[in-house]
Length: 212
Image (tube, rainbow, N blue to C red; front, side, top):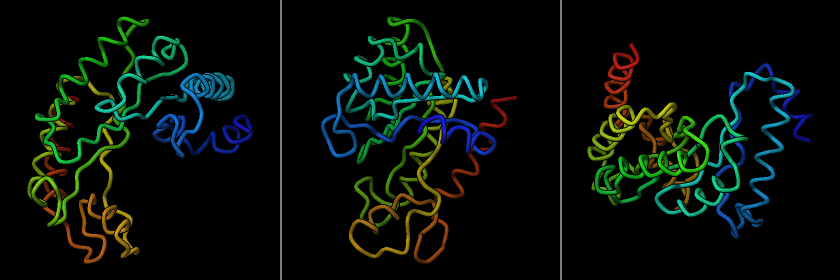
């Protein structure tokens, strides 16, 4: 199956991330840590045979909550079968500073050094709610937290940073739908930008200057 998918999408996909948030023992990943490791290994080896230059990353865990799983995977030899460590560092009601983003990133790099060396960190999903009922206090704090988190990650040489999300899910006015749409930099229902949209654009210019 992996071979079939990689061959079919090799001219479309620029990087592969193995699974989405495999929270072990839950519906998202009812298997074990070892079973996830075996999947990561199989995907990595298959991709490299077909498209050797395409990055493969994992395990897309939230390191604030599941650093213990990251540690287990690294001890198993994860770094041999990934081009980067992907994370989803949601901190819910906390700012990047109060959540300890810088400390978390440095802890992760320390664990990598202890288990084979350093690979790039890819932040492939994170964000804060920007609606009026947000636990962080509303849309202006969403904007502030985005900019400050990007600057921390630039300073810590995080390779890839992907904010979730631009629009939110929209179209679903159930409680779950409203919660998901609240993460967007645009209001999914009114289509109007939140302050975070302008903040993100400002941060993007900062990132371009930093990369040059």
